[in-house]
Length: 189
Image (tube, rainbow, N blue to C red):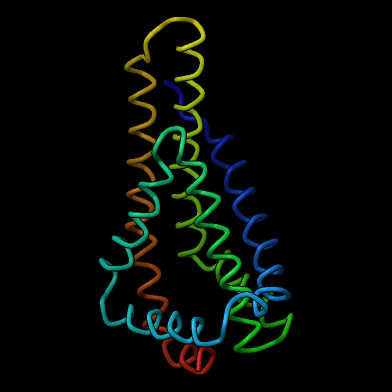
């Protein structure tokens, strides 16, 4: 039952690469597949989250995080969530700003603002737990053994760390939104 920070950091770096790559794809080819009206409705949904508070942000992210933590299928949800986030971010910037500099700035905010760092780290913990437990299941099946309590405990610890980090990230994100509300309104309008 060992928690591997090295694996968490590796997953975190993979998250960053996926987000950057898919945001660039979304920026250049996304408008061919996704209409501006869809992006407009997503924009309205984003604006309405400010009124709902940090608990709404937390619960929304917790759903995604919980799917990522499920052994065997969690990594699929990990890639799917990052793909959707990155691609939609790229498409949104293509419609709203239509500037590669705007895309770089948006990625910077998404990845390096405090809430982004904490949130992506939380997802890295969930996904690492899922991957580690999946490996443990495969090894147990190969050797004709049972999953150990230590394996289950490690999965739970990874998940609990991610939940705490997500709660912190949601509150930080809400604070950032409230603090930067005027600037955000100008950017997304």
